Length: 103
Image (cartoon, rainbow, N blue to C red):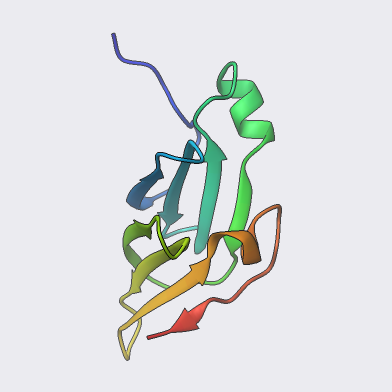
């Protein structure tokens, strides 16, 4: 059975999962954001209400990865010059306006 995890995505550009905290991370190329939502929400409407923005400005996101030990979310930004960026999960969660850190 296929279930919808998150709806109304404009242009998703990557996906990562934090198994321990049961969170889903994704980037959206049109919204230019890195977002997060709980995987264990009772239904999709509860999950949508609990969705948070970790980073609010990513011009051209291409991929998302998660480091469970360091608690960092990584993403590629293809804007020129292209870069690999990251943020700690707890520094941007709950609607934070974190611009991440370049590597």
